[in-house]
Length: 231
Image (cartoon, rainbow, N blue to C red; front, side):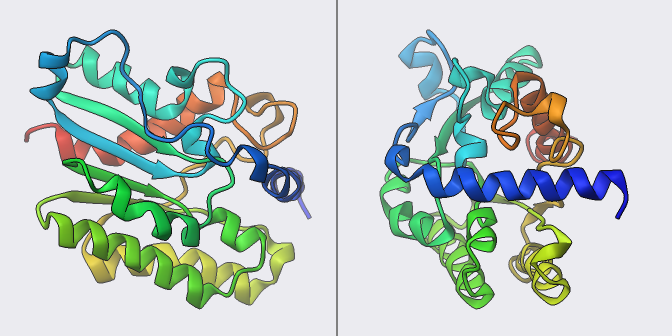
């Protein structure tokens, strides 16, 4: 096993421990707008990008939610003069089942771009992959039913080899398969270049630091920019 793989496995092991301990604060960062001091009239004139995810989206452990990758992306969007307002709807410890259970409430608002970042906690807890797939599909279906014009971006996640080759391979394919089947955009691995890198994660070893979130934001931006920047 090479050093890179060892680091990644440590990262996932730590994530298991933290995800099990996050139940108490599972609702701590729901529906937090990642913009600051923006006039109501100005926000109303902007299109909405909603991030629907777990502790990575929620910015777990950060002093300022605007340092989480959705907030970093809001700053990027503002610097380019694009008329989009980011909404951070991340919940620490969230599973695909939890997301499926709260999606109807989230859809009470108009959403132009919906970014789905869920599934990692399912895999780490050994949830049957058929259930994870079904839950993610249900979330996608709900968004499409509410408004077929909403652009959906699916954020992919990966598991370590010690979870078993068959399980990790099928888990990875869930995201690419759903993206193809539903004709939605895909971020192959949202934690690319961050997962397993100690310097880019907090002391728990798994939640990105401010610097780590900047890299995550770049991973997301690679896909998001193709959707929101006019050709």
